[in-house]
Amino acid sequence: MGQWSTFSLTASDAVVTAIEKYIALEISQRIKINGLLSKTPWTLDRINVDPFFQKRGHHEGTQYRCEACNRPLKHQFVLRSLNDQRVYKLGVSCFLSYAGISQMTVNDIQSHVNAAGKYRDQIIARYKAGKRFLGDEINILSFIVSHLRDQFLLPEIKECVK
Image 1: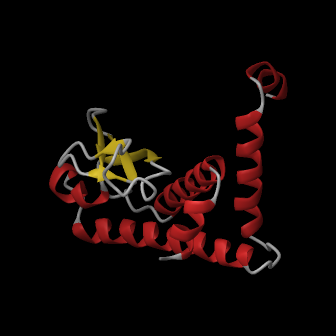
Image 2: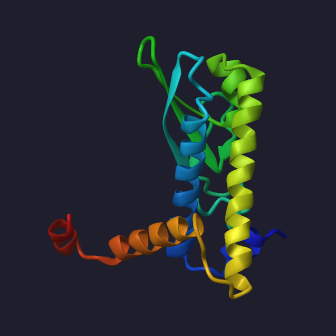
Image 3: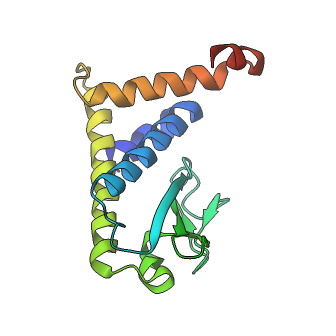
């Protein structure tokens, strides 16, 4: 079992959700910064993430499915057509067949998904080893703290904080 698999089984649902949302944002930023969809007629609206995909055993009660093949997904990519504004909710493996995105671009996107997962595992390993967070790691920590704080504030207080 990897760092994340072990950690996610024992961490609170709120922490797992916050970390997975951060990783989805990290993947989205990597795709946009590297212009991976810039030569396609598509834009990435968002990435939906099922934070409990592994806890559920991948298939039981999965929140998201690929519109093309109906496969359960941990990461659902919401693509919008620049031509006619159609919206597709896909797994990365269906980009080629359903949206006509090249295999090379699909491979690049998948490598960024994998890199973000490795980044998450490195953070977890440092945390378990009791090491301090430095540089970019502060971003994930502050995101998690912010997410958890917002999650536990009452709606009336959230309105005042905005």
